[in-house]
Each structure stands twice: as C-alpha cells, then as structure tokens.
Image (cartoon, rainbow, N blue to C red):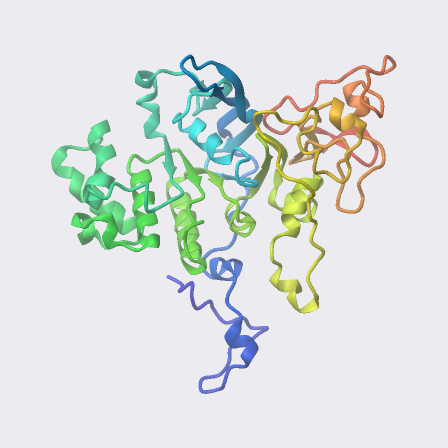
Length: 428
C-alpha cells in the first residue's frame, strides 16, 4: 500500500536527490489533505445511473422548547431540520456540509432512526420502504442495513469493554453467526480496517485517535450494511490520519458496495470522497450538485462564501483569493427568518426574499439551488429568476398574469431543468 506520508514522485516536480539539501520553503510547507489522499486513491467517481438506496423527502425534525416552572408547556420549537429532500445512490456517496448547528448531524441521526422525525418520509432499500415512523420492532431487521460512524472516536466507544466486545456486540444482538464464530469474525474485521487482529482483548484507551476511529468503522461494518452514515468521521484526526481513514473508507466502499452519507465541515475532505455534495443552512438544503458543478460553478451566495474560506494552496504563490465575509450571526432556529432563511446575511437580498421562500430549483443536469438570484460569483441577476415560476412579481406579491408551476418537489433529478440564461425549461 502507498505510504500516505510519502506520496510518489511527481515527474514535473522531481524530488530532491539523496544528500541534496532541502530549501527552507520545502522544509516548512506541509502536505495538504488533497496531496496526502490522492497519493493513496483518486477522488471517488460519480455513479450517475445508480438507483437510489435512500430517498428522503420533506424531512422535518422539530424539537419542542418547554417553559420553566411546575407546569412545563411547549412554547416553541427548534426547527433543526425543516423540509429537506435528497437521494443517496446505491454504492455512491453524498456529502452534507454547512456551518455548525445547521442540522447535518440531526439529519444523520434521523436516517439511522436515533431520532423519530416530526414529518416527512425516508424510503430505503430496493422496495423503498418508509422507515420514518416504523416501530423499534419493525426497524430491527433494517438496522443491519443502516449503520453509523460517530464523530468522536473517544466517546463513541465504551471504555469498560474490550475491542472484541465492542465490535462483536452487533453479531450477538442480530445472531448473524454462531457464538463460537464471533471472535474469528471480529479479528477478520479488525484486519480489514488495518488493525492487529490480536488486539481484540485490549481496551479503547490503549489506542490512538486514528486507531479508535478504525475500531468504530469495524463496528459499523460488522453487519455488512448497505448505507453508512459517517458523521464527521475524520474531524478529530490529524491531516495524515484523515487521509488514511478516507482512503480506507474508499477501499471499503469499492469492496462491499456501501453507500455513504458523509457529513463534514471540511470541504477538502468532502471533495475527495463525495461525487455529490449538498449544502445546508439553518435546517434547509440551499444547494445540491455534483462535485464539479458545486466547487467550480456554485450559484448560491452561501455556498460561494463557504468555498471562499477554503485555503487554496495552488494560489498561495499568487496571493490569496478574495474572502467573502458574511455579515451578522446565524439566526435562531427557534424563530427563523421568513422567506429565505439566508436573507439576513445575504448581500443580494431584496423584498421578495422576505416574502417568498425560494424553491430548490434544478438549474442543470445534476445541480439544484434555492435562491431567487441564483448565479455564479459576480454574475448574479438583478431581477429574481424564480418570480415567473412562482407566480409572483419582483417584490414577491402575487401576480395575476402568471400561473405558478410545481418546481423543487422531486428529491432526485429530472430530465428537464430551468436554464438561467434563457429563462426557459430545457432538457439534455
């Protein structure tokens, strides 16, 4: 296996010959995640024709806010997730990114049914059965197919149990193998994730952070799941260990045909692992697209602001690119703004943004955006592109002369989409 700490020599930039002294720049500049990860595996490819293993439609999770005192009454709701729709292709990867508190982890816990959703549907598997409101008894056979890798490798493992007990517990609960076959299966899984199989009798505190995360991955793989929800699986690790874990996940995905919902805030990691990316803001998906469309042609001002904050090593010698700084704080999910939730921080906001919520409009073969003024950076239109589709005028008031059209209702991608240039529906 390729050593991620020592990537192969680039023919256009030959390595320093043995005995030759490195320059100060070469000594001080660390390798980026992209360089470390690409030395092991190329970026994951898009499976455009794959059938969805998970279809999420209008999913909501509102947590009640109780009053203080003897009689506690519900006085409001935290709208953590409020009407999101997307699909995860079979054997593919969808990245979910956004600021802290935007609802990413809540979405992951809804899909694994650690939370019961307030509303919406989650259709899973070949038969697309709705798992949103199943009872625990009905969910038990399905839990084998949906597993989760937790964010913190230090708190997600029980310190009182050995690694063998932690990884073997799902096998005993679901009675997948006989009791005398549990230990060999545990050792096999530990070897698959790059750990010494003889360390099954050690405790979590005897391992490093990267090794603990590998134990968590082994536990998630125990039942051969069809879908893995990875909740920031590398955020607590060093860059070199991040590359190792991501490359390991790529190998496991290719070997076992596992679909991933990859939740992260590191856009460099998501770009390498996920061919499709969804951007969340305050409980809503504001943009979702394939990797190339999102990173090179983002149309939502929030996505553009996120991308501007990512360090770009390639442009370091030519001066940093302009950083887009958002004004104000993220509004409270208890009382979110009317219309577009991003309007209180958006430099493009107009009157229509406060009156009408923008739909998640498909603007390309695999590109959707929820913005009245969608456009590439520096090319946003002066008038709302969604007015005619929603049957309103420029200010967001109902327009008797136009008929509203159903847009933004399909959790997947349609064969027709709205072309921003011609302001018409087009097809491939």
